[in-house]
Each structure stands twice: as C-alpha cells, then as structure tokens.
Image (cartoon, rainbow, N blue to C red; front, side, top):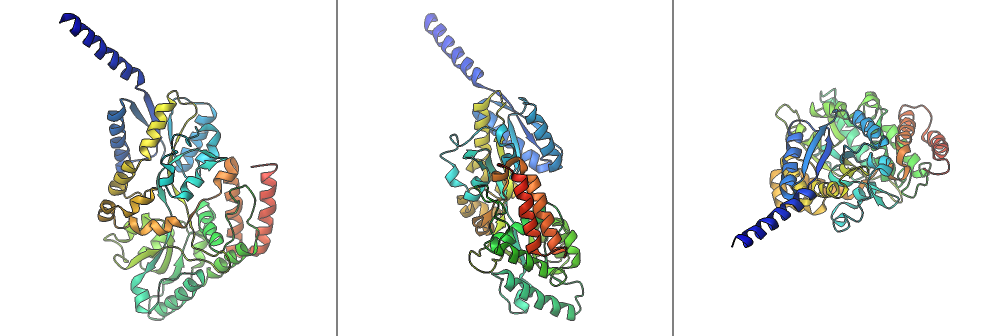
Length: 422
C-alpha cells in the first residue's frame, strides 16, 4: 500500500511539474481605460484559469499616436518583455517584420471573419494579426425629416446631395437657420483618408494603392468622386467642414442641425442619449454608392487586432492568447458588455447580441461592403501614403487645384515614394 501511495504521489508530482513547466508569464499592452480595461482583465482571468499562464497588462497612453510610437521603439529594440500587442487596423502591416505569422495557427478560424478584415492584416501572405473587434462608418439619416418630405434613404451620392439640398433649404426657410444637409470629416488628417477612400472606392476608383502594390489613384472614377465631394462644400455641407473631425460632425448632428452624417458606430448610442436633440429620430444605412461602372457602397475598415511579437520568450503560449482574445466566445461577450462590433460574421445573427445591443446587427451590411486602407501593401510607408492622399484631397475640397491636377501630382509623389518596392 505504501509503495502504491508513493508511486501515486510521484505521478501527481510529475504531472504538476509538467503543468508548471508549461505555464508562462505573458504580457499584453493596452491603452484601454475604465470598463474597457476591466473587461480585458476579466477575459485574461478566464484565460489564466484555462491555461495556467499568467498575463500582465502593460498600460499604454490613451493617445493612439503615442501608443504606436512606443510600439515601434520596443520592437525595433527587440524587446522580449511584451508578448502580445493590441494594434489598430493600420498598424500591424507597418510592423509586419516584427510579428509572428499567425496563418497556420488560425487556419481553421480565418474563414469565420469578414474577408476584408483578414485582407487588411495580411502582408505578403503572412497573417500578422488576428481581429479582435472592428469598426466601420455608416450613413446616419434623420428618419423624421425624410418622412416629412417624402424622401427615401439615398442609395447614391447624387441622391444624397439632391435630398440633402431640398430638405436643408426647406428647413432653413421654415426657420431652422443652422440646418445643414450633410456633415462629414473634412479636416486634413487620417479621418479624411477614410472618408475619401470611401468616395473613391464607391465610384469604382480603387483603393489608392491596390493589394498587389500598384498605384491606382489617378483615374477618371477617382477624379469624379473628389469633384462630387468638392461640390458639397458650401452647398449641402458648411465651409467649416474642411476643419471637421468626428466630434465636430457629431456635435452638429446631435444638436439636430444636419439631415445626414457620415460617422462611426460610437455616435449611435451617443445620439440616442437623453441630452441629444435627435434621440429616436434617426437611423443608419450603408454609405451611398457612386456613379458609373464599378460603383458600390464602401465603408473604410477600422478596428483593433492582436499581434504576437517575434521576440516573445513564450511564442506558443502568446499565440494561444491571441487566438483566445479573437475567439467567438470573447467577441460575443465583448459585443454584449462593451458594444464592440464583432469581426465574426455569424455573430451579427446572434440572438443574444441582438437583444442586448440592437445596433450591432444593423452594421452587418456595412461590413460586407468594408474596404481596408492600403496599409498592407505599403507597409512601413503607409503613414506617408495616407498623408499625401489626405493632403491632395483637402486641396481639392478647398479649391486649391482640381481633382485631376491633384491626383496626377499625387501619383507622381507616390511613385517616387514607392521606388523599387514598398
């Protein structure tokens, strides 16, 4: 009996030793605060119980610009203290050489995500990050005003311009002097890249730089798209829209002073707050399509992903953590508790999510039309590409050169920037 007990004890000890040897200390960086940080910690607690690993959160500045700058410094130095990075949709492709290829680890689940999101995180066939949650803008419209004037939700930009002008002028004539037809993000920054990419893509004008790396922006459809947008400024949109970012647009909209708005999902719940003049008076739809061959609705892809550092001391366990944070179970709980939009298509038909967050199913059609910014093909040069693009667009909107002139110059600058290869 004593011998059997001794053997059993040795076996248990050996088993515990194996578990202990497999357990790893991991670190993940996060700029989350408040409930977002609490949610992440709760998920990491679950992961720790399931795997025996320990995960520490390394806090980051709330500024995404500062976060990205720190990421680049750490990775350039080969820092092995950080295992998993939370990345904006445009960051991982710029840091692709510093992250592990997750293609094989995620081969059984990539099909569950929106294809455009996987495309946005794939560089030269290498999946550099797994989607955690996503974001894409929609067209916000005043359903009460459309009903008042007998108008339907516009399917094309031309329809939007005509409807916006008619309602704007009628409302002003009736005493609403501050009414605008359409507000969007026209300032010279990354947000304008998102807006203008949608205009260009919706007219069949491509993605600035295509997935194969070719520069496509200087084409008749792109020119037509920017000229259409230029015609809105001072007509259905205020001159001040050239300085608007997301919050300026939302401010005008939420005061009840716009018929249409282009904005991200966060504005939906805020617009239905008790302090909102448009509470219960609006809805959302996919952004309009352009004109001509190849026209379609297009919404620029946003969102956050998880990437694994190639310098991690525990790469296998770090990959498990990335898979866990991008899993269906975590995305469902995140949607219900944090109202973050899933990257997994099936969750848009999930009854629990629809009950808890009715806004989420409305975004399914938006994501099916999502278009990624060209960060994957341009890699470390994306920020310069985007800066050149939004500058050319802003010049066009403000009347400094025509769309044709500015896109021809942009093509030349991008060609010089590309050189032999991106």
